[in-house]
Image (cartoon, rainbow, N blue to C red; front, side):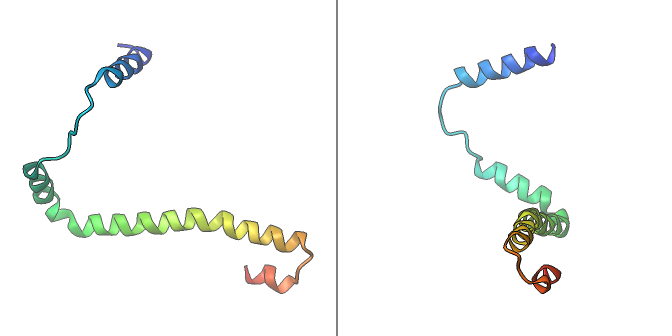
Length: 83
């Protein structure tokens, strides 16, 4: 099946699917937790690094905007050095 065919097939399945709640059963959640237990420390490190990465992704343009604002406003050079 071509990529286009797969896309159209997926779109058809989504549009004709019945609306209903397809949540996780308690058994599925228990199996996931049991499976992930040995990897708990790695998962926590991954989540922490993901949060730090998201923060840095937001902070970089904000800081760049502050630099531009200072330069445009003919601000003090010490402010640019601090940023």
